[in-house]
Image 1 (cartoon, one colour):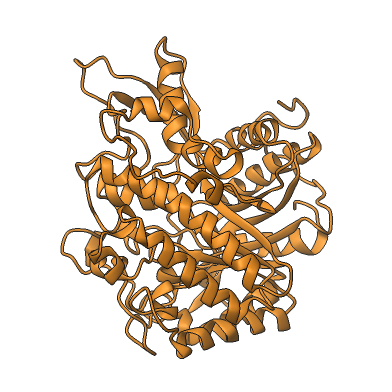
Image 2 (cartoon, one colour):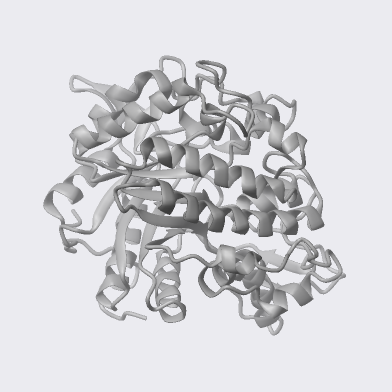
Length: 477
């Protein structure tokens, strides 16, 4: 671990090379709106958010930030802020409204305009094929617990790359398959809201399979030699109890190695299979699957927000469940419900997540050590805070000093990792705009641009101008 710099990661004046790509990120269902326009079909998040009690305040993504209609001015704002890259996601139900069959021309046209608009403004397009909005008809047929969904994803990836594969710089197959599998099928906190540990583990495997098949299809269809990627949300685990090593091993297997090992090593960890043997027999894993999954990728996307502190539950005291996710009764930890997640020291973001920039440095170094030849990119990092709008003769402003401090400390962590030889290619701040924060609706604001949900006005926050200065000068302000 680096010892230079301030112990609280509040360094300034740190220089980043011109080819270190700094930008921002969003996701389709969270910002686009236009949920029923131009042939778009329903997704599992349309169904889930319209189900009473599933999302705070009954919020839905029907309108969201209305990016579907305001994309040009949104791209103008990105250009004004100097973003070098924009990581967006493509809504599968816009491309294939039922999840299979012919493409929807209007949906393709929207993303074609978006990609062209980015390129015209000198912004690198980073396209995520799946950020959780599975077409509802595929869920009706079993969703990610059904093997066929992986093949439908491969078909969708091929069709999309055939349309956009001459212009997109980086293709990311999946965003955070941990959330898709465990929160969607295990805990019930995310769409489709199922609470079945065996289905969650089947979803893990079928998502991994979809990734491998999708990589192959994009490579075949794209004509501009793009980078291929997947984005994982890594769990950085802490704990100093006698039982913490066992708890960390179990959660690391479920949360991290269940994805990194098949994707980057072509194998599932033996301890993962043993830990979950009482939940499933893994009969969904078939001969040849691991070879399909284990495809070379140019960059591994790293999403990081906070750490988790774990130990084994004694079975008698009240079990702590501070894992950072909504608790709606199910478990995102199949086979390891006897692990408890302890409350961590603050300060916290508005999500209740602890702020630990040292965890990002630790994670990047660990990935370098385990996968020394794999380039990395931070594809999400950011924070929700209770922003306030002020107004004076210069107009409306949001003085989000907490977010600037958070970003500065995490850019410092990234810089320290770079200084120690980590092959880190860039950093995409989450998020460009306030948006629909899944089960929390519009109650949590992650954006560097504020959205007034009554008027849909965009108000760049002080953090947006901080990022603008960083990109322009290549030096932390």
